[in-house]
Amino acid sequence: MDGRLTIVLPSLPAEVVGLLSNEAIENELASSISLTAPNLQRVLARANKSSQSNNDWHSRLAEQFSLSSESLPVAALRAKADGLEVEDSNWLCADIVHLRPDLDHILLFDSTSFDYVQAECNQLFNELNKLFVDESFEFIYAQDGRGYCRLSKPVATIFTPLSQVHGKNILPFLPKEGDEKFWRRTLNEIQMKLTVSDVNQARENQGYVGVNGLWLWGVGPLPKLSNSVFSKVFCNDAFAKGLAQCSQVEHANLDGAGVTSLFSGEEVLLVDDGLCDKDDLANCVNKIEAIEKCWITPAVKALRNGSLKELRLSCDGVSYRLTSGMLRRWWRRDLKALDVLKYLSGRNN
Image (cartoon, rainbow, N blue to C red):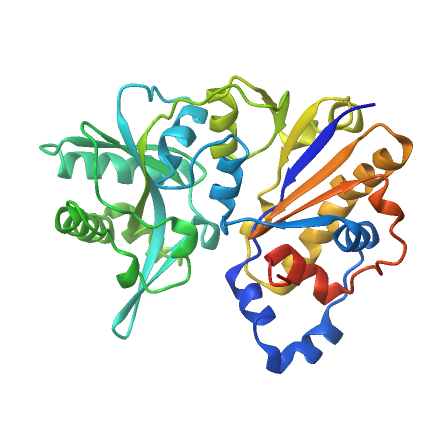
C-alpha cells in the first residue's frame, strides 16, 4: 500500500544542545544517559539523511507547507487557529513572559516557566488596551500564554522569535530596523504597566512571579497557501493548525492519531512539539522515549507489514527518509543513546 508519514519532531532544548556541543564532557554524558528507544536508534542509523537549511521548529513546519521561512507570519496563523478574524489585518504574537533583572541584564522566561490563569491574563490585556487607547493596535489574549497584537498597518520591523530568547538576556533580541525605537519603547511601557498592575501585586503577595512583560514576534498578515500534499495533519500546536486550515487540510489533535488513521495509504503529517516545554536532559530523554512508543514503533511495524511506504523525520538542520528496504541495512549499527540526541539536533552533520 502506498502512503507516507512525515513527522516533524520538536527541537531539542538549547540547554541540551549546549551539552552535546561540549566535547570535554562527552564521555561523562554518554555514560549518564539511559535511553530506551530501539526502533528510533535503528531508524536514524539506517535512514537516508539530507541536510536542510532550517534550524528551528517553526521554519521546519512551514517548509512542509511550502511557506518561506523568511519573516514567518506565525501570529496570523496561530490567531486563525485560535478562532480570531484575521483576514484583514497584520498581526504580532504578544505572548506573556516573566522578565527578571539580573545585574545589567534582563532575563526572559516564557509561559512554560510559571503558573497563570486566564482571568489574570484577560485583565492584564485589558489594562494595556486602556494604556494604548490612542495607538493603532489592539492587544487580544487567547489562551495558554498566547496573546496577539492586531495592527492596522504593515510593520517593517524585525522581531525575534520567542523560542530564541527564552532564558536569555533580552537586550540583543529587541526589535530592529523600521520603527524599532517605537516598538522598543512600547515593550518598555508594557513592562512598566504590567509590573505595577494589581494583578501582579496580588501574584507576588501569593508567592508567584509576575506576568510583567509581553514578547512581540511573528509579524505579518495571513499568507495565501496552495493546496498541500497532505491529506491529514495531526497536531496540538496552534501554528500547525493554522497552516492546515489555510491549506484546507483536515486536522485533528495528536490523541486522535491512531494506527488506522496514520497508515491509511495517504500522505499524513504528524507534528510533535512537546519537547519545547522543559529544558533539562531528563525530560528530553523521557520525551524521546514517548515519541518512540507513540509514533516510531508503530511506523516501523507499518513499514515492515507494507501498510506504510515511507517514513520521514524532520529535525533541526537535517531530515531522515526510511523505506522498508532501508530497514534491512543490517550493516548500519544501531545508534548509541548519545548519538540519538546528536542526530536529532543535527549535531552529526
